[in-house]
Image 1 (cartoon, one colour):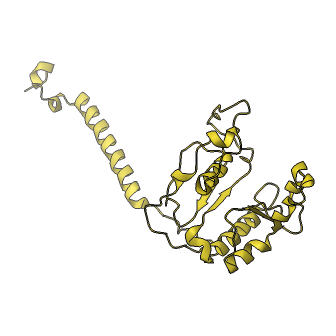
Image 2 (cartoon, helix red, strand yellow):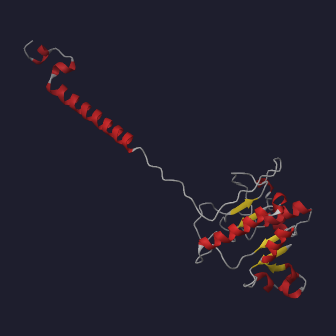
Image 3 (spheres, one colour):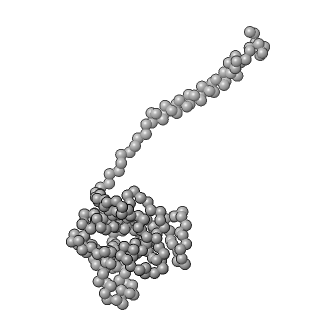
Length: 235
């Protein structure tokens, strides 16, 4: 596994005791330029993790800057020869502080927090599919373990659901769709106000006619189909 990060930022993993005590582990943390190099030369490792510490969608950063950064990452991935045999999992490290109406399920003593979004991009990712399977960050580890035939690292990833339900390997690999930086919103839809006003006018006219007929029946008994002599009127 190789982890990439921005060269102008310190990667938080290097501060963990296991990285400090093991001199071999820091060699797996490389600048982000290595990711693009591996894509261009077909040397992308089996598992690579990108931990950006620069452009981000996290407040108070500019959301557009974070989106452009992800756009560049995905564009390079889609143009590479590794597209047909790889998958890109884009996930957020927390829920962003927003309210969530779904109570986190109880899985162990630590439990889950609020839901955080994730996107799966790849040639075998189900198209237009929203996976409602309960997963967590260890589900990515679970999928790697299944794919590489590895044993679980701990109880959490052993009990986690895999990401395999988000893939469809029964179909042929889908070609990538490259998107530009410019956004083109759909043209505004203008309702046919004339039809609406005609309908309103017709309803008001029908109501007025009904009120007028009711008033006329009170004044002119003949409209009720009664005999005029029953009211003492001349026949």
